[in-house]
Image (cartoon, one colour):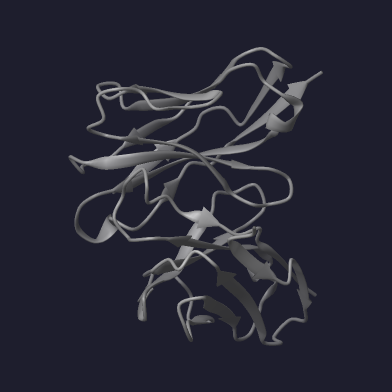
Length: 117
Length: 116
C-alpha cells in the first residue's frame, strides 16, 4: 500500500520569500512517481511538478523545485519568491508503476499555504 | 483554452433525487477519472475509464455510476444522493495510465454538490 504524509496543515510565508512544504511517502513499489498539485479556493487542481523515482536530478519548474531525498523517502516542494497568488492548498501525490496501482494517485491531506503581503 | 470542462460548477439536489454531473475534455486523452473530495480532505478516486473500459474502485458505493459515451465525455450519476455525498467532484484526464512526467493528470474545475 502507498501512503503520503503531509505534516503541515497550514503554513505562512511573507511575499517574496521562499517556503518549503513537506511530503514524505511510503511504498513497496521499486518504481514510482511523485507529484505536487495546487488547489486554489476555486477548486481546480493544478499540476505543478513531477519527480520520477529514478530521476537523477531534482525536478524544477520555474519557481517550483522538488527536493527529492529517496533514502529518506521525502519529496518536499520548494516555492521561491512567493507571490500572493500562491496562497492555496498544496497536495503531494504518488503513483506506483507496478501492478494494479499504476494509474492511481494517492494524495496526502494537503498543506494550506497563506502568503502574507 | 479550457481542456477539462465540468458542468455545472455548482449543483444543488434533494436527498434521494438522482443527479448527473458532466465532464468533457478537449485533450483526446484515453483515461478519464472521477474523484470525490470532501471538505478539507484529499481527493478520493471513485473510478476511471481507460477508453471504454470501466474500472471501479473497490470502496466506491454502488450509489455512484459512470458513463463514457465517447472519448470526450464522461458522466457521474449519483442514483440516490445522501447528505454524506455532498462534496466537490473532480474530473481528471491523462493520456495513458502509466506514471510519468509527461502523463500527469489534468483536472477540471470541479462541481460542488450540495444535498438538501
